[in-house]
Image (cartoon, rainbow, N blue to C red; front, side, top):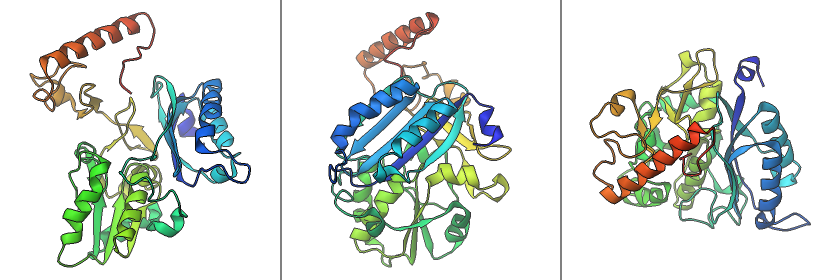
Length: 326
């Protein structure tokens, strides 16, 4: 961990790996991993969310630099996770309020639980492209670049020229492939896909491979790794990268690496907000914004106001309220 990283008190690690977590050869099934992993995280003072499924592990966690290093070492004691890697960034305050380890059908929900659960992911997905090689690929005129994230994430930043499927959730991605990509009169020579940390684009390449597409590539480590490794002056990234924690967004750091962005979040609809958005007449902290003012009922807003009131009371007592969004 570099000196610049150490200046911030908290480390944030985004990690995932598609791997069969079935109880074989004396190794625990993913359902048996939940309790010990939660205990280890709590002992280290690590906060965040980790998902476990038959197809692998996915999570984002925050803690002291030593705690995150210890957690990664703990995960590596399982031979199936020995080579698991993480994308690291920093935070000046805890990025989460509690620790959760959850069992899921999928570690990223696409509605395709068996896509990678019964095979070697390296044989079923597209080709990894390292951040240092990404620019050359996406600048090739024969490459179709696809952003596999949700529309509200794309709205605050993406790569130049990337196609936005305008999906509201990753579950809608296969439908977009079937209704748009598969209907193109000529299939692209190359398809390059990316997402925040790599997990969605990796699974989506597996879907495309299964649908008969060829020359499929995905950004290894996702946008976070790209922003971490590619110098700002060489970057093809435009804007901020949305992240699912209290920082809301991150961007290129002036001296390299990542730094928190300037966005806030509407805790009613989870849309990223600029300072200008917060000046809109519809904005009420924790209750409504210009994106959701017409989508929630007055009963919903009354409930959100009560939640916001309890959050403020908890903060005044130096406590964390369980209803505060992460």
